Image (cartoon, rainbow, N blue to C red; front, side, top):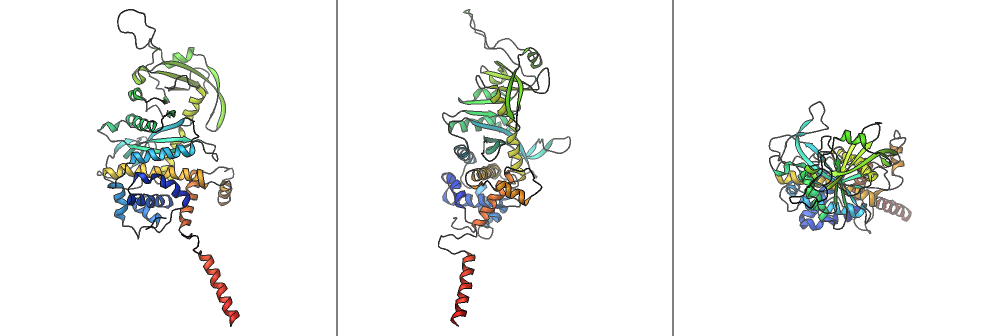
Length: 442
């Protein structure tokens, strides 16, 4: 329990929050726990003051305490992201399995010229033909996990880096590679498979650490080359790449496609795929890559081209990993619509750069809590009873997870702090018994 908080922290949630205590000073950790519980318990706006209200601390703590936690307290959002990632991997990724990482960027809309790093960015979710918006753009790293109670792939956001125009941080690929490199350094001996869309392919891939593979969609105009020929023994510099390969359409016309059975988008089906090992010299340099052409609906040519740096890959596994990339889109949508990430109205540099990573960490905590302590087989059935229009609902959703955790946090306020402290119902029963005893004595 927080010594100066109205809302005690449930033991199951406190066990997860305690993992982050080395990242903060003692006062800051107390504030972190209070704001995290308030963020998860709040059903309204997740502003900084809204977190205080959700925790029941608005009358006990001055709002400056919460604002200072983001703007001036001593803690590192990158260290918080690494701690969250290690927690998610330890709890939800089986030992020995490769860690699957998903990368994407999103825009959190903001207003005002004084908001740090706010600018005009592409916004694919914007209405109308002009897909632009003003706000803070974030590159998000998520860990894909498999939850036994959910059949679909689940992406748990763990790290985020702010895009700052006019600096080296303006490159989304540079930010993504930095996050992946740091995560891989914290997981020695663990294989890390990164999947991203076609925007995350560039010369940064030449600096990937050992044990990290990168899979993305291949651009249609990619300049591919054959592998370098063997040395001839003649004088001069040996060739670093082979001959230029034809376009993807011409490669597909002569490629040999084989049937591959894959499970993607909730269905298991057989498609045709062809693999080619070559060089994408402008992107990966001398590192060989494997191009996988997928023929799904069309009878000739190809429907999708993927490229991976994984040596001798399993085509079905690569296709499955890329199909599961949509899970990060769902996670980002959940962050905005369910968790209220980005609703805080911080403006200073430190506060802006810390608030979104803090909120994504709370989202990851909610998933970890439900997967390890909150799930009950009757949850989906209870949801159908309360919402009978969900006739085919058999699995809990992210909204169900957050609602249950919110109820547990709020219910902890009405539970006795000590085991020997009676509950209100017990006190009422004792009073009734005492009144009956007085009537008998009279």
